Image (cartoon, rainbow, N blue to C red; front, side):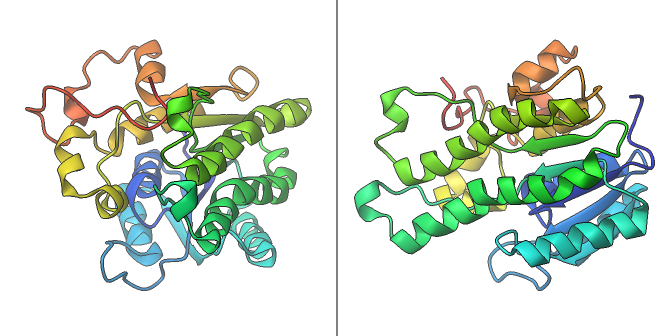
Length: 274
């Protein structure tokens, strides 16, 4: 596909960070963007709301629909998808970007937090994909992108924060299974994960400001997502993709512009990537 003009994208967790960046990248083509997130009021520590991003989408050249969505609530998600399809005449892609993170070991992870990570990470991917399928299969190029990592079974990823690891690996396993299940109707399902840490407010909040200079900006993930969305759904599905590798395959050679600090000599490799 040449571009995303007139295509409708439903992006969860799009009020900030990577989700917002994907929304703005696609809006430049004239896409219709559904900003589906819980942040309809300003957060005391994190920037962005569904309404502020909607304004940015329109300014970038797209159309926007801001909907307050809790991805744990089946009725809420179903109603949001229906509202989006009625407004724009269908849905062409779902980006499962909403996420919950707590980098604590099993013994120190409250069960309530464990449940939250599974509800927002793994369970929401299944829920949103199930409910979106009737719309996506009507698209000429239906896509689902899950922001989840390669299935790296090295034991070093099991010890430090296995509760979080399980929830993210569950997303990637769903990618592989849903891709095969949805292949029959021409809907692609792929995962996308960064080679390096990404400089977002959420990452800063969890890991501290020191990680920002050794990270890339969300723009690299947005550019990689764009490459997926503009590829024929029948030609790319069932892959656990890394942003840098995908962009290299598509001809990108200069990655300095993606660095949060252009002078950084050694970027921090992201979790689950060797």
